[in-house]
Length: 88
Image (cartoon, rainbow, N blue to C red; front, side, top):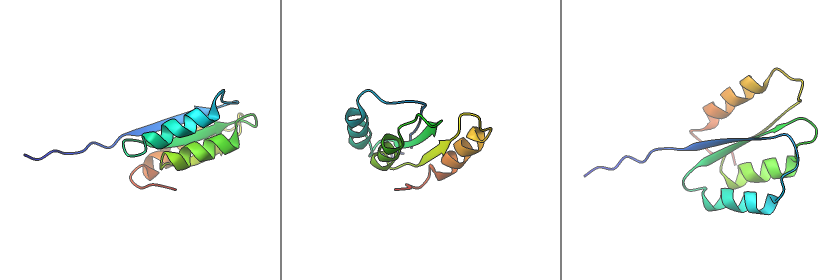
């Protein structure tokens, strides 16, 4: 019997503060063996530290974009390419 393990990925975006950053980071860490989390901070109000720590805990990547930028699509494409290997 052969069981093929399916890869999962979560893309998370934030444009402001997170109410409970420690819980978000812990949740990412607890599920790191099941899913990779790629985080995007949008705008100057995004919590850079939480975005980076969630990405590290979730074996993904962290990206930041200005709220007036048209580059969000490009950042998502880059994160999808990184999905096969951990960034942290």
